[in-house]
Image (cartoon, rainbow over all chains, first blue to last red; front, side, top):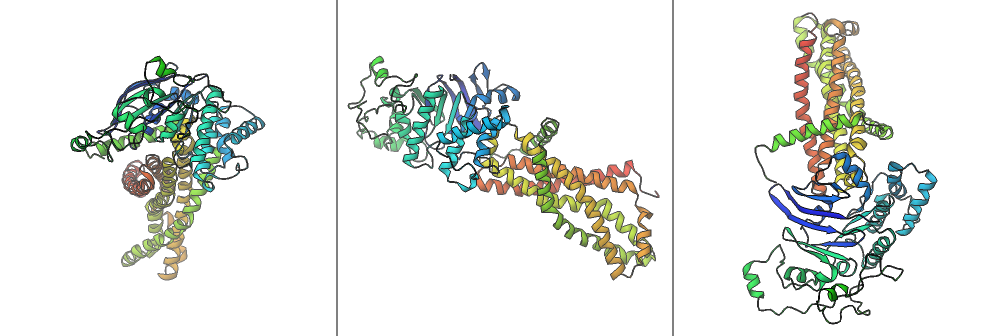
Length: 315
Length: 257
């Protein structure tokens, strides 16, 4: 069963440069969340702060009664055993082959026999489709394979919280779709709390239960998928629909002149909300809500054509 | 990056803290024997040949410098003692240190830096393993051990270089070169040389590891880190060498003084 991650007033800056300030949100236990944001808004920094690789300037991250931001080094190493992290490039240890890489956490933290380790490793390798590549070194395989191997390694200790740092960067659309499906299936199977950091809107629109958007050094919005997808809030609307009209500019923020020029432009209508991707079993995950649930509950009329099962554009 | 007056102090402080962390981690079990042996072999393999090649001219230059002067005093018989004194006390630890820092340290820094930017170190920490204990401690101990043995090696090669130069080129007599070994030098000189080599090995490995683990900003960051680590190590080495020599002369008076 997954674990809840409660973030309170988190603030991080490098030197005098504020990365983001006062971020508060709760990753509900067992749900899939996506953290979105334009490039360079500190999404990866946020993820690294969650696992205590970076110390925030202010704020707290509560996981099972431990505050990651202030706890001791020893507690930190203890609490990290709950985490599985997929780093951007897989972060495989270059001196070991894939098999040893994936077996590494088991050999370090468990007293399992080599035979048991072998069966677990092979199971995870099969899950990510890497059977046959166990003896390869990380330098000899493609980025996508490294990423999948990284995922296998993140999974061997049966983590309660899974963090993905841009799982879709550098992957082709087919592999991205497979990986997304894998994340959903994993969540269904293990009930681990998942956080995906990405700027791929396809992933964001169809995979998660909750979406967060980091923009302009703060958390613009965090909430259920349908809430953000039906939101008229300019930043959220612009980002989730990949439009040029809106407050986000090429460099960072658009200046007043640019915004004034856009003021009379007609905003394109919100596209229909796609149906949330189901696990391979075809039934709702335990934490998944039926389509349109949030909209009905909050009296929001979703854009026309939403939740149609034949809307394929997004998957 | 912002520049401020306290920035150098901050770096010095965190380097020192890093050294303390490493010392603390070095007593923590399990000791990484395999990594230690691999690193020791690696550092030795990149340093032995260049060190030997540097050591021969070192001994020869001393013989050359001292030879002419000593001839005017009519004390050619003491060339050997001058060479031993200079090589064992100073030249050998310094030559060892420069090569350990230049060849071994830069390789350690580049290796750890590459791991840092590939997020391997982060991944290691997330998997609940302390990279200082796992990677830095074996490297530091391996470098110290190699420096220790390398120093003995350089001393021998340096003195032999001086011998060949003195006897073959400067018409010195083999017997007096060897017989005068103990005229000025004594055993503690050798010990202090070895202790110096250990300390230099420690400094070189610590600075290289620190710089490597704090590399940032992609491949260029690793290059910068290697560059800085070599420069910083050299500066620290000469300061440490001066202090240790001064302390040594206070503790062990030179022979005949």
